[in-house]
Image 1 (cartoon, rainbow, N blue to C red):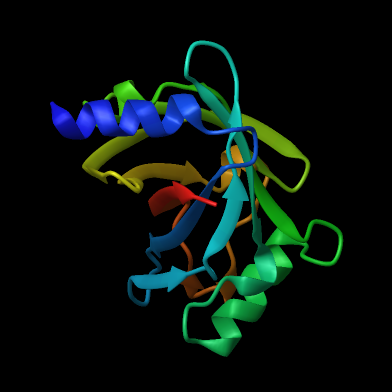
Image 2 (cartoon, rainbow, N blue to C red; image 1 turned 30 degrees about the horizontal axis):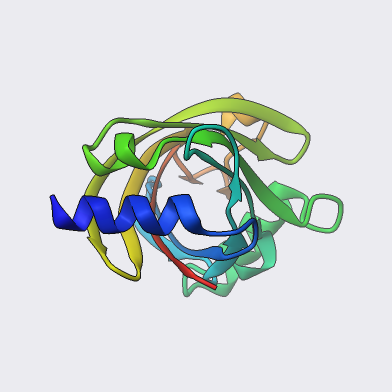
Length: 175
């Protein structure tokens, strides 16, 4: 209870740019050869207050920072995203209720990949908070085809699966 009150005071008293968050993105995919994992470079973003203690944010993950530790796969990944024309994957969050996240309610947002935007819902878990801020994990699945992406393939034998599981660790702290 004390932790919840401390977090509520932190969020309620923070001026517009006083809270920042860092997102650490990881993803898992499958292919006919083997499953694979990847990460993106950590992204820092500001939280903007909206009504009644809620927050909004826009997070941009550079496509160039996606790394599966396999250069061939990474080149195909960047080509699939058309990185020169669409250099970021963007997520837009509106009126996020920290209390809902604390109790593990799903998090809804708009995910934009290339020029396609879709509503996405993430499962929230592993909430942790202290006097300095809070952290949680969000997980969701992305269908590449729903975003107009053709999963990479090689030699007609190796094909990447349509679904990619994304996990994001978010840490919110005072600026």
